[in-house]
Image 1 (cartoon, rainbow, N blue to C red):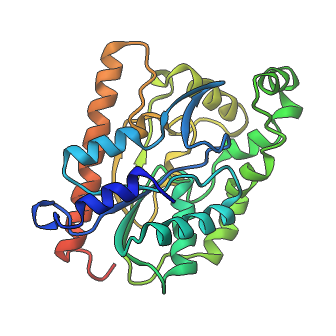
Image 2: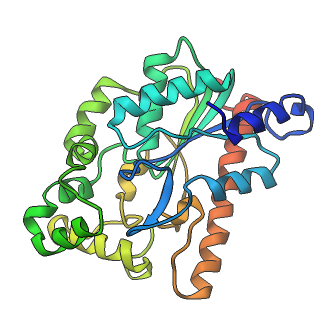
Length: 287
């Protein structure tokens, strides 16, 4: 597989003495049911999901390698694909930074391939470690909202076709996952959580959150994932970022909110880099 990630790795191999981290950061994106690694607004395709992260890490002189081309398959397919991509890229030792459902993929990847991968640490951002109620709502969306389902299907997004993807991230499914894949032993693992006050969410996440709240009541979330579900093992911090803003994409209409979102995003990136630096310094030597 040829990609800018492999090119970046080649160019940066001999620069470790000038970098804040000895090992590169591998990024695993969250669920993308379109399968093209891009941010979508309806039928509109925007940048790659990792692009703002890549730029932010580059600004901090951190070697950043996004896992590309995982497609839209189920979790096991993503795990297998990620492993093959890492082998193709020839990445030896690395940290993993994972967003949303990518954190679940990372946990399973480490569990199944720990003897073949030298993972130095794992940090998850807004990962539904205990499941997400929105997954249950998405599965039954065509029954509860037939008119909206018809409109979504007409625009190319059929929730029925994607139901098996959502099913892996319900609270019930994640309870079984946590039993099968507990905390990786002797590996530093951390989590970052995010939540935004309901009335400060952008319109899209606000509508999604409102639909879930009608069934499950009020709770802190980033518009997609409950904040309480994002906390796992060593919880580092909580940031006021919606689910897209965690990737560096702000869809707020007000300029002030967009500026605040970007500032919070960069503060979160600093938190992640500092964590990896602490791992390499031996602060989390016992995991």
